[in-house]
Each structure stands twice: as structure tokens, then as C-alpha cells.
Length: 111
Image 1 (tube, rainbow, N blue to C red):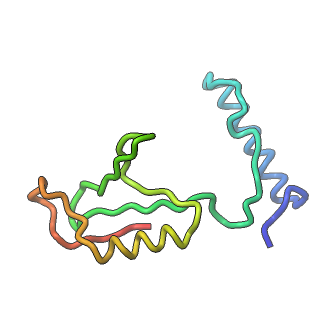
Image 2 (cartoon, one colour):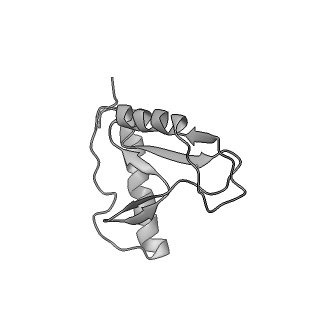
């Protein structure tokens, strides 16, 4: 069962998050807006699962170009199964960059 806001440990975590956010506003001059002021219990351990992939022995990660955010070196999923399916698919594909001679043809996927 996931902890709720009535759980003493969760209340402490939320209080610490508020204190960190107040410090960032006060000491670092970050905007005083609603960012990180609310939370929701999603009933799962993580909000999002990221999938990163790179050819083995290569420093260049696979990139996905998306209209809304330009190019990124990861894919984010709210559903863990979707992230695991992509990771499995990438393990069986060649995740190579033809322009990089230093990259090997074998791929490794990190989650």
C-alpha cells in the first residue's frame, strides 16, 4: 500500500519538499510560482520511466526528435510496460549511428 498524506513519514517528506522549494525561492531567486507546490499519489513507485539507449562502447546516445521538444536522448513513459517494451525492442535492434566510426554495432539499453 502506498503511503498517504496522513502517513507521518510522508508528511515529513512533504514538509521537507516545501522547505527546499522555499529555500530555492528565497536564497536562489527562483520564481515564486506554483511549481512543486502540489503533489498527487499516483499509486505507483515512479511517475515516469525513462529509456536510454546507446551502441556498446559509444558515447553517443540514440536520439529521438519530437516536434514539441526538439531532439532528446531518452524516451519517457508513464506506463512501465511501455518502457520495458521499447527497451526490449532496442535490445534486439541495432542502435547505431552510421556517422560515428568509433561506435560498435552491438547495442546496450539502459533503464
